[in-house]
Image (cartoon, rainbow, N blue to C red; front, top):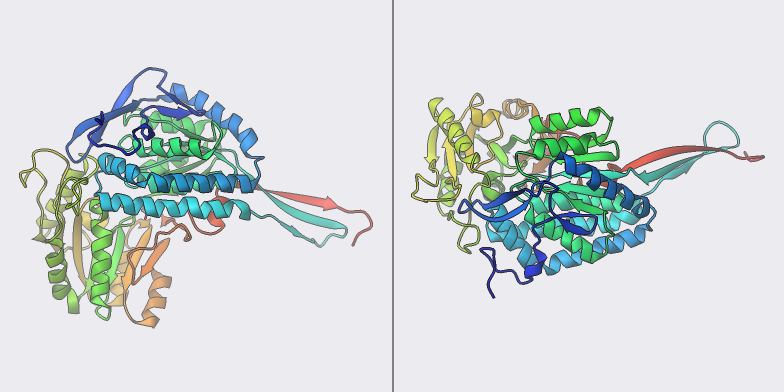
Length: 500
Ligand SMILES: O=CCCC(=O)O
């Protein structure tokens, strides 16, 4: 059997390359399409409909009509459909992983890791669907009762990035569908295909037409399509994951109609290693966190602070282990680090390295782009470790989003907490220490929405995910908080006759 793609799927019919609206696979009204590239080769391997703002009215209408039925559907029925979706995604895990590797560039093992993480959301939200609760209370005024009633807010829109295109879709859509909202997803132009597979499986899971719509659009049309969704009066909620500047623009668009918004924005996360830590534990956590998807995660370690007593020893171990990472195409089973997903990421990584070296940092390992290494295609960058980095350098001040890691030396706890908090961002922070007292101080003093103590992995469907400061607002996943983002609450005050 041959395939028109550079890979062979077990179920070829799973992968559709049209947008998914009202239960049908459709082109853009303009007939235009945009290319989807394999970042491992830079070659186009698929194309999708290039929706523009004129297509949005019909999509929202479909979601609005579906909402009129879906909001009344029994929560157990919604839970069963979420579970059926979960099972279908599990069954098609191999095909999803392959497509994810080709569109995002991540190694196959990481693609499987993302799918397993993402399945936590369908599983979790299937449970949450039946646990939406209001309450009843007795106020001071006599003969009265007050009821809080929770209802789905309406049509929701998910604007999703390319770095975890399956997990980010399921984290948002899972919560929305559990609440009884319908959702329009706009995947990133780099990674629309896995989202279309999820839509295909949602259809098979029994979700009615219009409950989950997927709008595909090019990089050029993304701003106008996002704006049209944010400003549409029948879209009641927007959830965005991406950069802080774009998040701020989304918030402005949504402010016009006072929409409820969730913003999961940039990181610049500190990773602090005290000399009383378990070094092996810190090393393993850093290697996994930092080199995952070539450093392209909002919660990745951007600034690594190592206490002076163990700085040289830790650096040597880090370099030793990083040297063994094999760079290559994600579909090659030997590959441990794939390419960057977008070509624009490579010059940014180089700019951060140059700025650091110009300021006095030294390259302890790496530093080369794929073309420096003789690779003729794809968007590769060697895992790179910079030593003697300081707070003033670009790598400490901006999110690098590439496999470049800067090591800073610190002496005291007060100093490192001040440096760690010296950023407009507040997504995640990590700290390694064996002191119980310090653990409590650090937990209370770090300005971040998520803190990993002796771990580099705190993302899970059961735990609220979200930042503070310019890393955004609102929580995704976790008990109560995530579904709450898709609910409105009504206060009903009742007067009772001859009661008390
Ligand atoms: O890049 C952002 C999401 C990463 C995660 O959910 O752990």
